[in-house]
Length: 426
Image 1 (cartoon, rainbow, N blue to C red):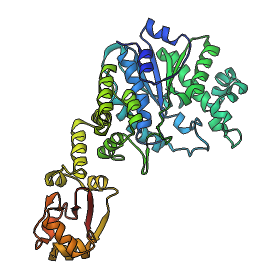
Image 2 (image 1 turned 135 degrees about the horizontal axis):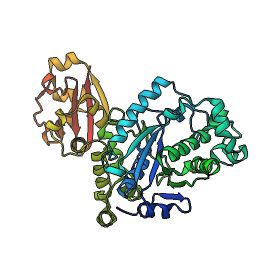
Image 3 (image 1 turned 120 degrees about the horizontal axis):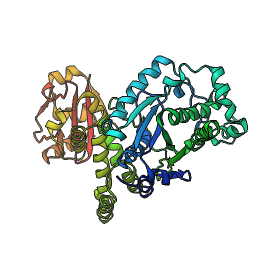
């Protein structure tokens, strides 16, 4: 067991804590929950910080409850949103809920006795709760004035907020009340943008049943350059390998800035403080070796995906940095090839030409424009500066033909140490 609040504090995760929360956590095993939004069929790495919060909570001897918002997903949380969100139908939500549950089950321990993790769906208690009953039994306890003080509402008053999204904090507040009443859940956690919604829940518990409920929020994750965390040019970094491949996932963490790596390794790994201090010392002595990034990328890729996926991502990365082999190249799927060589110049060549066979000099100059002249191509070839599919080619009379195809459609050409070209045979 560890001190949960102290753990969040040294990791730089703690943002707000309600008075009395730390004392409660030191006195008894507490059930605490975090809500997860099922508006997509996968969580992304922005959600991962909340998963880590639940992990630390469980490691500290408490009971984590993950709430998937089958009901709140139908309403839409206005927190941090500048416009009304599209509402999903029940079929889409149910599919998303199923996927999100599977991902959560990968991280939390559901078989650890009294503090086993639990997943709940707020649709279970909202599906038979009539509108008139809700506004009579719940709405009367929270004033409009109180609701208007919340940032999630105030920030939208000028641009406009529907009654649907305005009522979200009351719906989330009832979640806390329900879990407090029926599952002895005394604590709600979430990102710092959820502070207002969480306080509405604790206030409802106080006003309706004179009960005590507590709150902790964690820092919203930022990037040193001011960019949005978890976003790349192609969009969110997802936990689902079909949406973000393990290679792309690994590369995201490997390429974070040094200042971000120092922050993220505390938030997203389970490394102890001593381990992180040691890694930072090594990193500071030789920043170019990217010790922190490599440790972060390995740990998080193994836990989100698998050790095998990590090893494959590492091997795939080596292809672009000169250490990969033809064997490692041949293992790549079509999707892997597109991911690994995203950003590499791509050239299309007609299949009939490859099947007939093209002299390598003509291939490098006339058909792919890898070299501007035959003289330069010939000189580079004889000097060992050209590779086809990670194998050196020094014979100026060699032919490029169907035997060179990877997955029957690609050829990887390399000029010098760092210049790659992906030839697609159509």
